[in-house]
Length: 414
Image (cartoon, rainbow, N blue to C red; front, side, top):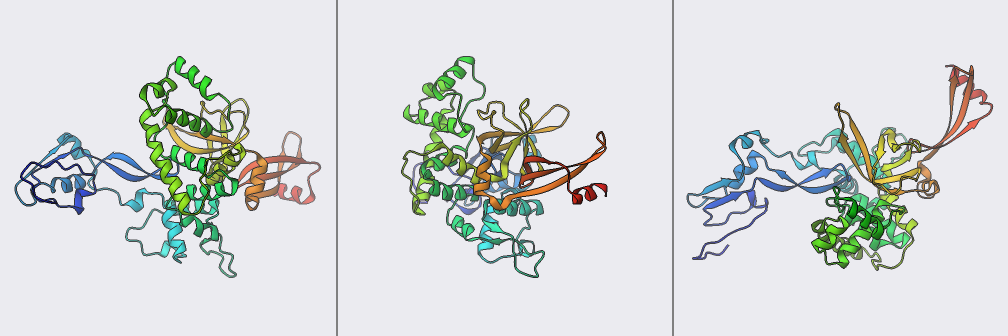
């Protein structure tokens, strides 16, 4: 940086901790915070979260002052708090979702990720989760090569197309699907809306709720559709705080969606997708959300509660503010763990979209299974049997068989 006779003020991100030396810096004022890339389990993507830095990062920042002459560092937190901070940051491979990395390595020909020479080996659960997600998205498939019973999944042609998008695989898959369904612009808006903090303010009074219901409506096939309506309202009102507050919308968050939308649209155009914001069918966008979040398909357990069963054997509760409470089948773009009294946790499903069972048959025929299950009814003193249609372990339909087959009876007696 050039020398000047007048005093200089340098505003920097944490990039300057280790990679930049500016001659003449005598004073560093450290906020103790940084935007750190980390896996956001709510949205299932990597994001930048504002967090407290480690002691090692603080030492690096202090070292920016006085490199060529004596200097001073002022830290905006207490010495006691400093002692309680972690000594070092976790390596990125330990705190990020590995789906993008795994897809890149598979495209490069790395078959066995467990034998790959990682500089810092990732957690086994993180690797398994990344592979499971990529399998669900269709980016990977089981290796069916003969005589390889324990072969690792291999990349698919679809996975190679997804790799061309500098996005999380969820959204790359959703945008590719949106091209087929004629709603790329709307899919980009959904992607932008689900990246940051909640658009809606949660603690609002009755007047705000009534105004929101009058303007946005109370019926929609997806919670995401209400977000889209709210953001369009904020954009038309130039993100004015007064107008947004009246609707119960966070004005700063709404403003931050605009550049994200432009970024997603630019990426889509660079990959040859049609980004014109034309008319579209609601069902088209619903299917695209399903394709991007198919690992979060859920079925309502009963009509009297909001309890749900998800694919892969998980349980959750649909958010009370969701507009799709009448739908027996749904997919959630956000899943979060909420603590309860007594130490238990609830899995809350939000940003939900209603589904039709036929869409699973249309879009994921290979993931549907039909099994005959038998049980012994001690009250009736007889074996009962039923046919169960499941999607990735989630039972969708049950049909009782009368009488149970001979094979079913023998299995039940074992």
